Length: 48
Image (tube, rainbow, N blue to C red):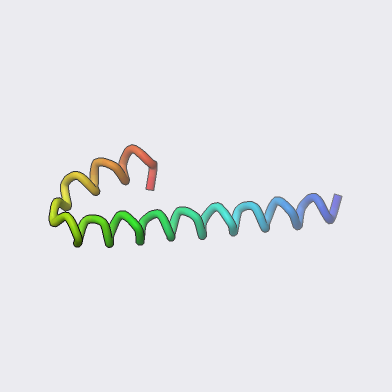
């Protein structure tokens, strides 16, 4: 049970890290394209 709990925590950490990198990616993408509205719409769809 303890090992399962630890795996769950690792998964949650991995998920938040993934979301953070996604947000960073969309931020850079927005700066490159210059269309912040599009990035906002995409991030809203992703649930970020």
